[in-house]
Image 1 (tube, rainbow, N blue to C red):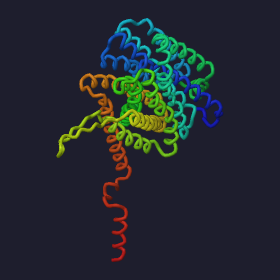
Image 2: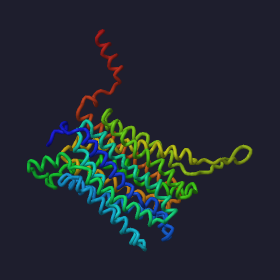
Image 3: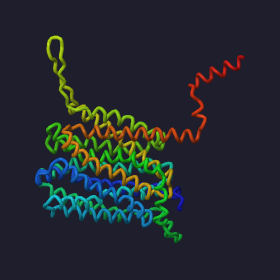
Image 4: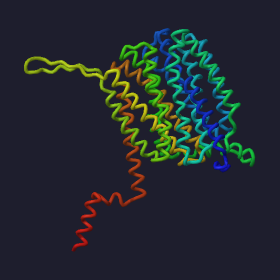
Length: 441
């Protein structure tokens, strides 16, 4: 493989920023149902479960195809694969304007989901331009393309209110196609592909690329990403609906406040990549899960009225999270989830440098499936439980499981590497005191 130190910084930066812009556009299209789905819900008279399925359906496609797109990117080059993904998704988005019934909208949403597969393509492409010591930062910058969710939440409501949801679909489709063509014309093939073409070396066979998926570690990384990315996507889709229902907002205001979650959950992924390079991805994951447990616990508390039988009569008081505290908590949650997204993908090129596409694809696929499953679960819990904060109760359970599994997996690795840990049960200062006492005898 070509020595990456010989590649000019300008070429590396061009590849990185073009990929990030293309991914931002793809993500904006991938999240389009978070806004247009609200008007479609009213048009078709859908309940919350049907609405949850509709907004989550694009995430299903974008998740399932990530594994294959990641492998194809390793084999044929991310530049070519990303162009095809963007053009196909643009055609599908325009095609939404022909849908009339709920099944037709679901089918169209499946095709729009192709845009979500762009992530594994971009990860494979970007990772090949940078050495291991800089991959965390580079992939963090690329992953900041998640801000496309905020772009849709800020701009799509204005277009939809003025011209209807069909106009949003048409504008987003044209924009995606134009950006895809510009990306292909201005970018170049990654160094790995160029070197293979020069030397005539064949790409790694599909079966060989799948071998790392036998490792439990890959699936543990996938659970991490199921929360930090899947829950991010789910909340990015669900929050406008949540704010309209729980706080009585209009769609434009709900979209703007939901962007207060999407923006930090996207932009600060760059910080997560830098911190992972500097302090280690494991430490960043502890920060992410620890703070997320606290935030989801607080957000889970339902709007409650208490009546206490006092000495001189009943005393009633009301306890609920107001809009300002809610926005702050969601902002903090989004910030630490963004750190975690970068930290998860920092692991992959380090542990599996020859299988970034395959491992990154399956981790991205499981994470994306979280974005499909969770909105449906949110809607079903609304219909069954009837408590708005039930979505955060579910996320609290999910992140708690991830934190516990990560901690015990790390402890198991430490015991394997340092078996003396199990024998040393006293604190260091007690051990030193015991040794000093022995020396005085």
